[in-house]
Image (cartoon, rainbow, N blue to C red; front, side, top):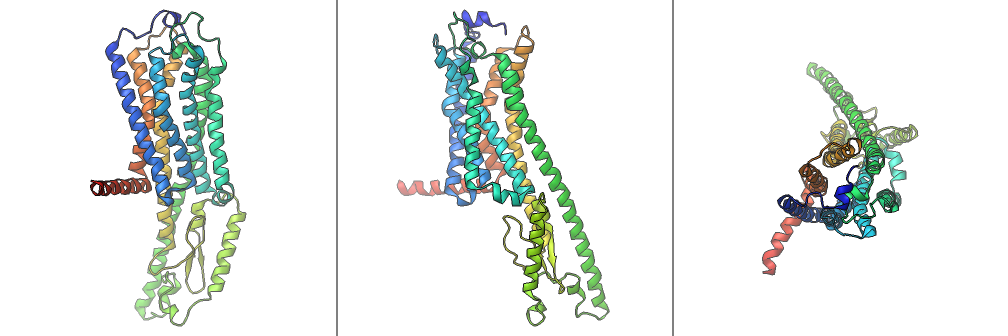
Length: 413
């Protein structure tokens, strides 16, 4: 990059005081919003036991990274954009590396969330074995460890800054070839492509299963309609029930013709064991399969995280599976939106870095560079809004906390 004059003589945008003041004010606002919003996310997980899941632990890791962006990284970015500190290369490199460490930790936390969702939805039995609390903690340590190593690489390059440089400027102390080829292509694009592939596989599999559920439901309704049609001719003793119309355990069988529940349990256990041995069976496959008895009883086979088989009158196992599948799809969609938001916020600044490296003579307006920096930092403040808007459990917990604070306010007064 041809920036020697800017590095050694004067600050590139020292002549734009209004732009500089607007930039600093916006950075401070983003910092406050990021800290408050992500603290609420962490507090919601600590207050609501139902939110203490492996998925949310990784989201808390992402929230902690965003809190540190607001508390540490944004002030460091403001200082370096002002050319501070002057004549202190080690401290300058530390300030520059902080934001990259937090960025890497964020992207690796998102990758861990995607991998966890893949196993929970498509590999439920392997999930039970591998995603223990201890393994989740180990994964968190790995994400932060790898993020720290890859983010502090500029600290190892002590000779990048010109010897007569007066200002701590990012483009002077960090080689653009490192930012493009290593930080962008290897550390950002590779995890992003992997996550997109994971979520695409999840969505396609769930969509396929929803279609199967719809076909199964239609076939069941047609069968019941055909069987009940025979009762209109006078045979009303076993017509509907033999076709699966008795979906609850409380019909006429409860009075006398109750089936042998031991046989039902044996069939269910055999079904579950067969599914465990099958390997990559999906959670949706496990939950949509049913166990049928001679008397027409139907029990949903027990998948991971599902309640024990408790047939109720008028409640179809297919409907239960459809509802749970839709819930899993909605959760995966919300997490994919978090990833999409990360891409939208961080891609512009990396594209500018590519322009600075591949086209040294191209003039990138300073206002455009500052806007891209602000957008990347704004990602830390937008994530909590997405949680509250898309994820019902977070939304209800945060709403309850707000109502509790409003009720407690008048009492203290």
